[in-house]
View 1 (cartoon, rainbow, N blue to C red):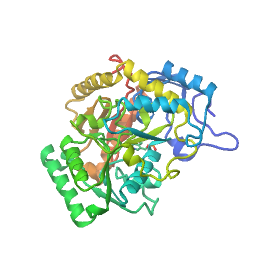
View 2: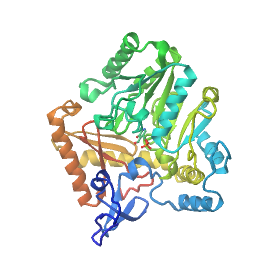
View 3: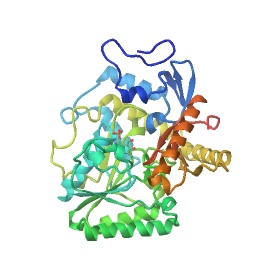
View 4: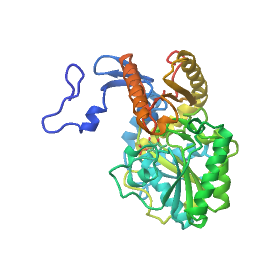
Length: 421
Ligand code: PLP
């Protein structure tokens, strides 16, 4: 319950867990486009978008109408038992955006579940065990997804034993290594080769899993040459290249998929969720049918995967993104926002980097090398949190991220206007 001042108060028999109470500075009454109207009577510019989810903005009329209409037709039919039209339509729409050859789609509810589905697929399709994941990657909070996550110890500490058959390879982090991008890529690929020579035999390598643009790990673009290096190596060793596009996909970075910033890159598996349905829970993995067919029937999926209302919202979302040119808007508005941040925040010595691609932007505090860990990292994190709080005081919602929390991240909806930017 909420009191007249807009503060969360417990109900008589139950209350939100401490984590939820602490984490909820704003209680929404209603929301529209880029704006959240709080129960405190204030209008907040929402540059969190439910962590990159409400792609078409809050409550886009077409998404709302599609969901409402679908509710009156059928809300749920378990998709391996009874198929429904929204999922067929969503598959068609997604197919318009998938790379040639990636022609088979399977659905779940959340990003983590889709990551798990991709792990299962990779292991069953190759008959091999090892998944190599790239440092600073975030892939979710279920046991398998947390086992693959290296974006911060908080995601797995106290949670083990984690899944076996996982190895980690360094991210080409030019900023922290204080090297050129080219040198950082060469260094990271050498480390990958060393991993295969010393720890994970190539015959045991099922897949390499990477976000094409690091999300929770620090809002860092992945150098195209690194992705190409991983593509070449996975192909050579008969392993799959699995791209986690959960946060970077669906227009977020100014291309429909984050990996499209790397010319001619065709992965084996794409994982998507978040922005695909503007807030309705649905996720998917896509791969060539020949790979997807190697999974035992009945081994993937669950009761609610590919829900009809979420799928209808997904069809409407992709329609709005196409018709309103939102991928282009992401590119243009993102460029304006990045320029504005760089100009407006120039000369502030506590800021070490202002970066971003499309509408996935980050402002990093402190010293990049120190932010990899150590006592100074805590100061940078305190600064980032203080700035986030100051933004709330100015009616602007942002988030923080990075292994030590030193980055303020800015994730506007794809419909954001020049004026809002
Ligand atoms: N993968 C990436 C890249 C993500 O950013 C996230 C969530 O933030 C996930 C996977 C997990 O998705 P979910 O929180 O829907 O389980």
